[in-house]
Image (cartoon, rainbow, N blue to C red; front, side, top):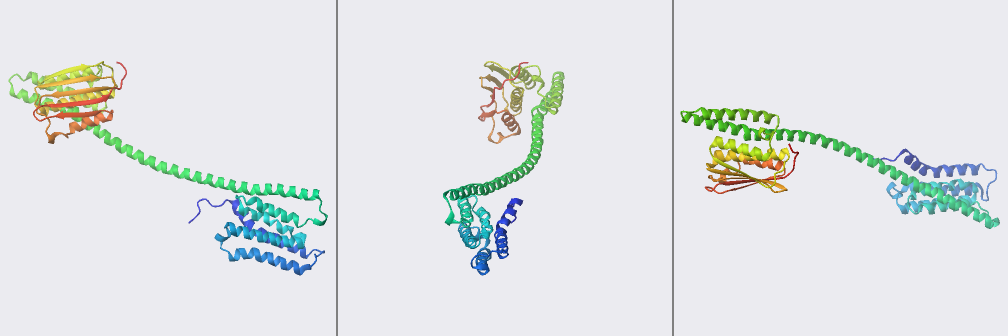
Length: 402
């Protein structure tokens, strides 16, 4: 599996340098030592033996240990100790091998960013300076000078290793955060596209539902009234009043159809608030059906938001249409109650009631959907033969006075 966050160029170069620096420094030290006119005691054979020992150590760790094992803390520590030990022997034999000691600074990076980084750098510094110091002629000032160098060098190189590792970790986290953000943005873009599609489909369904409710609440009721008046006209000699009522219902239905298409409020609410519109509705309904309808308004009247008033008006229309079509009532009461936080609409009749199989018609579903759309609710109480009570409750959201 490919690493989504590979090592940076600097990390790859430094890791490669840590691997090859011991070989380069050992080879350089050996070449300079062999061509040096002043050979140390023991000469070239001892130099070659110690160099072979150092080379065998660094090659052995790479040849015989798998990469996963070489990264473990114990293996890194043993390998580092072996390199420092062979470097100390070579430097004591020939000071030119302090060049090989420098590889310890690179190997100390394998401990970063742990607390062992500083001891590794300090050990390298001690081997580096301790092997070239003539201890027989060392003074307190000279030893103190070397100790200061060791401390400063340890802090500088060790701190640099730790800072470099942490900087790379921070950059890696940054790259991961950027990658996650980009993936999240792409996912959000896909979700946004899906939401737009769903919203478009939901808008189509809502508009279809709205049109269905408007047709049912206005056109269907108007046509029912027209048919009722025309049938009544057929049964009497003087049909003019019934024909006139049918024409009036036709005109109102046409007006409501145009308003439904344009999503406008009922014409009864254009220049009046809900109580006046309810009174007009009751008068027209009584004139059409011949059933006595009593309207009562209680509480302090306040102008409601158009959405609330339209909803209550349409619910009243639907409830009265159901009474006219199904109830066979002789008396109906409509009560509009302003109670402060909510507005109640109660419509009661003395008709036949709602039978169990009739309680889930389109009209009742339409009323419930309208009320849910404004945060309201609908309750229906009915007993066969004893009438029906329809109660609608909506929040009293106030609108601007006309």
